[in-house]
Image (cartoon, rainbow, N blue to C red; front, side, top):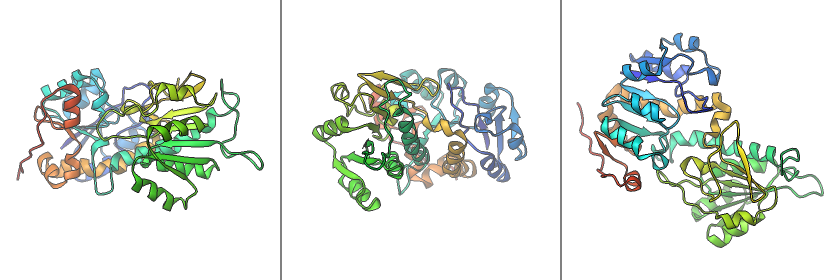
Length: 373
């Protein structure tokens, strides 16, 4: 199979879809990899790192798309990239179509592209590709919180996350006990913070209690407990995920108005629309704004801050799926792996994800695949 890796053109996206080790594995299996020159630079990976594996270096994004049967990338499609897609192409990427534009999904349908969203692929333990990025985002959220609690930040509270003897630590309130929430809780505990996790799933909260030996305060989510937790927080981390759907606003603007002056709000859910009413997308180079005396951090591609770690993590999680399609063909790979088929958003000209079809009022058809053997 001919596999293409384009350079990401989303502003400040430094990750690359496959590391040299992944490209090496594909080429050793007999496949061809077209790698756009400079695609790895943001992750400190040179063109030479890829040519040594046998990759073919090409010098334009157009050539990558025109020569490839399968395109592997990182960020959601830009308008210019949707124009480059080829008829019947396979696309692997973080898609987040529920918060995309209707024109993007219409172009996928018009060109019969099989679009597979990394964030929707499942296995027996959860969402394996998204998991690696969520681990990174969870850890980063605490590093970022520490930075913006400092006095030199405009409006910062000037407090140490872990406190000192005789001085209380910061209160970190986390909405959501998924991978981001658990990883953030672990990192915050390691810094000595007081940690409160709010979630509507009692089993998840029990798991947290067991994992952290009841050092984390767990709270059942409802409007009353969320409102109280938000008001108490020095740091509020929004870590809510509804698979394939736009995230609902669990924190209202009125709740934000009642937060402590200089509190830090990090909406990790912003790539799916955000779980806080006052959130709007920011960038790595201009990451914060202050509203109602609360510092808002709403960067949708946080893992790009540690692009090399993120690129290797993405490679490790996604390579098996790309290899399966390359070795067995698309239809057989989807038939053999029901979890992979869960990631398919568009297939043969129709929308195969019900949540996305509902958002854009498109015809939904359940995925039907037949073996090519």
